[in-house]
Length: 330
Image (cartoon, rainbow, N blue to C red; front, side, top):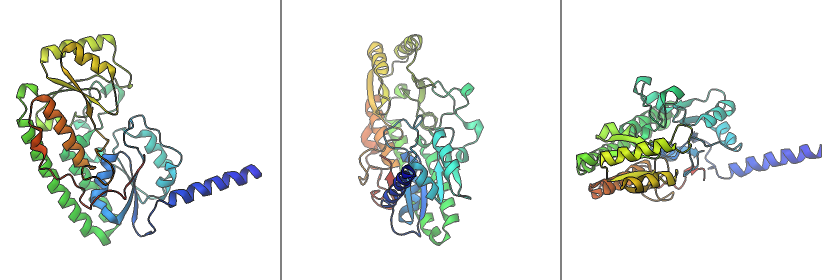
């Protein structure tokens, strides 16, 4: 009996602690998202009319992330849940299905954005494993579709603020058009023979065809292990034949193997790309989905012989203002 009392006390303290981070304005929609690009897109549409919580911490491997039991509390209080889908967040999806309130929708944005015949499969995401490449948001036009779905769902649940959600969506659409044009101009500044991407983790499979890049490989296998010696040797041979100036690693996926491949192939190794970790800190003007894309394009352009300054005119600020009130798990 004494142990039971301590258990209930622990649960009560946990609930109180979580509620301490939530605004006292209970009229706002409570929304849960997963990876930070999705959380940020939702924030840009919902603004201060929603309480948004992102349960996947920045800087972690979102493919292998296991949510904590405390995440069930945020999910159980949510009025709406947004996830990428395409099997990116399966543990989080299972947790949401088990703990959401009755009638609360789980919106799988990727699966509402493209059809199965548009899914991309590759070395990191082989078709036989049944897991398509989930990184749709690196194509800004798909990110805009995410935003449209978010706008429609928020307006449906909260019609009193539908005009604000629409205005935010329209402003976000203008920013995406600006971003898209800047990426095209920056890509045009890269010599055509250099518009080739070899990365550790293939996050740019939907980005590349939009802007005329060729994905020549990704070295991380589907099980997130290191590639075999034979695969490494084949990539080195391919890089020498392709004559690309640089290959790209990730801050989230540090790889001594990719560094070795670059060294033996005689190409520059750049290890600072990001796919779901926003640059800067919450509240910084660049801490946004658009800021993430600008950050990556500057790195690509500089390494591949283009002009990164062509990205400088893109407005990376969040539509509703600084995102200091956004709760992205750390």
